[in-house]
Image (cartoon, rainbow, N blue to C red; front, side):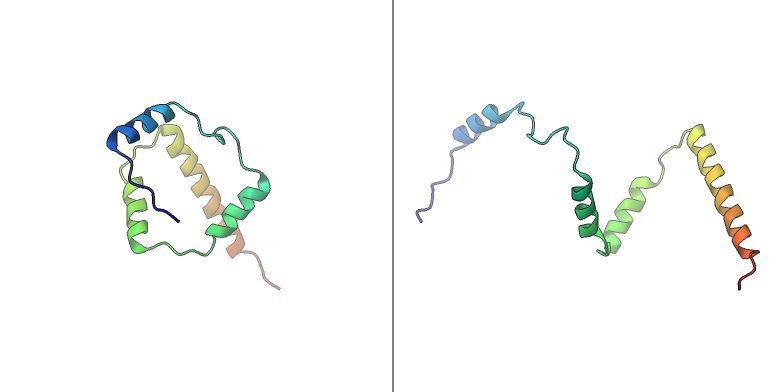
Length: 93
């Protein structure tokens, strides 16, 4: 197979200009439930590196939360504690 010569900068610029403004063919199309399940399964069990964990942690830190969000977190935590307390006091067979 014959190798093609590299494209000139002018030719690359023409191709780039021709493709500007095009919308991806799958834009706005939601994946099916089957596809979502396959995508989810492919990501399961893949451990994250320490670097990835540090980046995710840094991205979340320092972001202000609205009063409504703080209230929702408080309610969720209260429900979680109530459920834990209830499960501790349940007699086991």
